Image 1: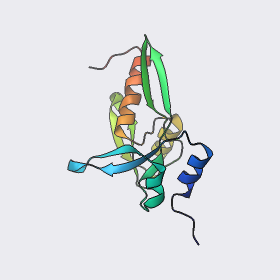
Image 2 (image 1 turned 180 degrees about the horizontal axis):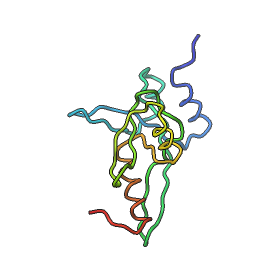
Image 3 (image 1 turned 120 degrees about the vertical axis):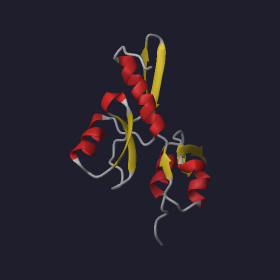
Image 4 (image 1 turned 180 degrees about the vertical axis):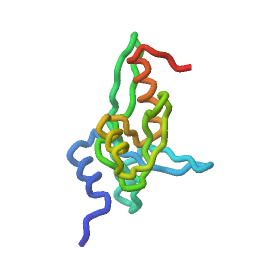
Length: 134
């Protein structure tokens, strides 16, 4: 008998029931979002659109708390999309191609699984630098 396709997620949740699980779902107009789901949904379904919800990082600048998801620490699958803060502090979408730029983004802690995560990270970086966003 083969292992459940989501064994890693199930094992992680069993070891720490405080972690949250998310599912990647399609919305209209070709957009996608991560939504919180229950472990039972992971067990019943066989698709690969699940992940353990990343922990949150934060910084407080001038009394304002900025939060963003923990950056990705493991390279995604080849050709998988990721988001990061790029030149001129813009949020950019890229595809993992195992190139030096991809590796540098991952090692620097700038790689995010979602556009929203990269945007939150961008706001925090600007705040820490004492800048403003127009």
